[in-house]
Length: 512
Image 1: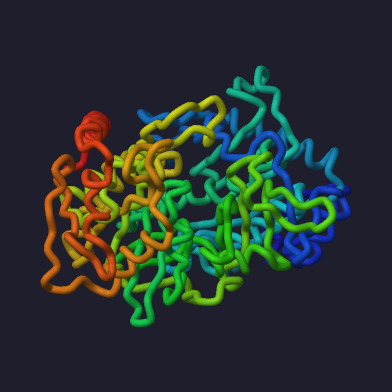
Image 2 (image 1 turned 90 degrees about the vertical axis):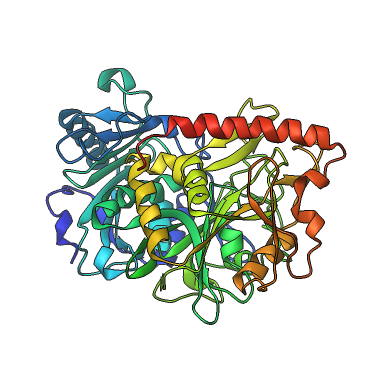
């Protein structure tokens, strides 16, 4: 029951515990914090933060985190006293200024053996709605413990007084199982804080946490799609003929794969019903929450091509808004791992099979590319490396995750593939991006099983095993050096990227 918060909240605060979706939507509109689309979805804006506040994330350094968290990484620390001071300040402001507070009780982790309790205390109705729609229904038994999130998007801490990087704080305390989020209205901070907790706890149970989407075919064969934001996890895991397990966060143990969440957090930029019908329909209905999406003033029609607020528009909806899902969020040991890289250099093959050694290499690299417009002031193309395809949320040493992957690949017959969802025929600005239909056709061919006589050719730069042909796909489209106008230019760019690969891999040590 909800009596756990008794003593945390008191005074004249009106506490709403697990309010209905309709109630939270009504409250948001009453407070002029959001509006409805023509189809009934709720649209809000997140203010100055339209993405994660990566520089404002902290972990409390104490006996619960000292020997677990990779303090050599870019992780800011707080001590117990500073965390407590911030918590007291947040609760004080909440009691004095917020007459109504929302409590959401939920869980993370579809496998009951690896379930985490999640309690959100927030001053914001749309964020309560977000938590309700993205997390799983509350389980009475949560073997991993229960974490309480104290959330006030309007509170800005005095950075000088508290010795902070800025007035915004996202802080995790593994000893007290508490999380503080203040000074940002970006909904994704809630889900990524819980993701970070799961990623830190699960390796101690022999479970590999994965920044990935996952789905299963009609026979139960599971495919997992690893990738950074914008590489296609959600899109590719939500394909015709596949049953969705989840779109973003999973764990794999000897019991199989399981989703952490009960909902999806899909990017909306350039969303089309013709290309992603399931996602489009799920986004455009009552109960869905859109974030930083532009609406027509009179039509209330969302314009998914308008990036005047941000290119990082998002929509949150429960998994059961999709037509084909795995209801319990679980699946068998996967048949295929797909490592997704949106290669803006245009030099990686569209599809290549990886050996176990290569799988470790590319898993620890976590490569994709950023292009002009995705970050303030950025020009041209930039190679991005994020170990395990999720470094900001993987708080342990890369070796902890890499060794788990190595053990899984040794024990199970999982095939690993590198998929370029980016460019070909030239780098960004010159070449073209692979059509979604082409990438899906490549993946579908692998999922149903390659013909026994399928031959492979070794890529001349990256030594990858590239199929000479796939079902109804011209083998030439799988050989990137043949798609450039100048092979000399291709090899120049490919070798430059390979050097960056090797340099970044050398920075990651400790995987035996």
